[in-house]
Length: 96
Image 1 (cartoon, rainbow, N blue to C red):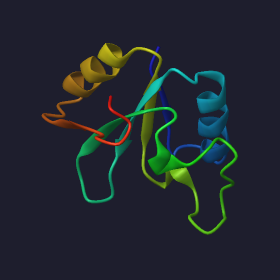
Image 2: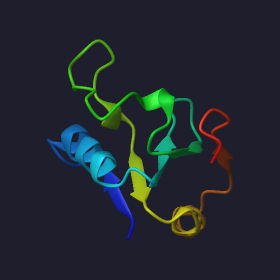
Image 3: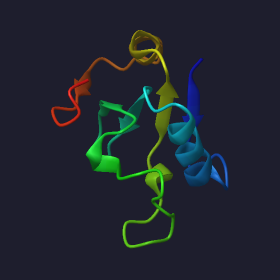
Image 4: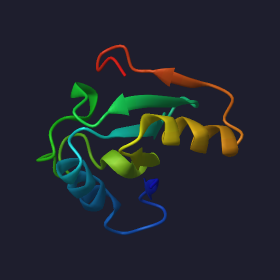
């Protein structure tokens, strides 16, 4: 099942995303990058800190850009294709 988190859609998006990550440590998420385009990450990717990351801290909310999550990597890539997203980059740090 694909789950989306985005500050513009839900007031508690950051906390809900962090809870999802804590509950699905082997999952994946697509990050809509601020520079445009999408990148696929593992839940434990170092780019996004730990699940203890608090919104409003030095780096702000993780969901100021849309996060699309699933425990199934292929499901996320299929979702992207259905949305007309032509390219999804793979994070080289978390080796998706």
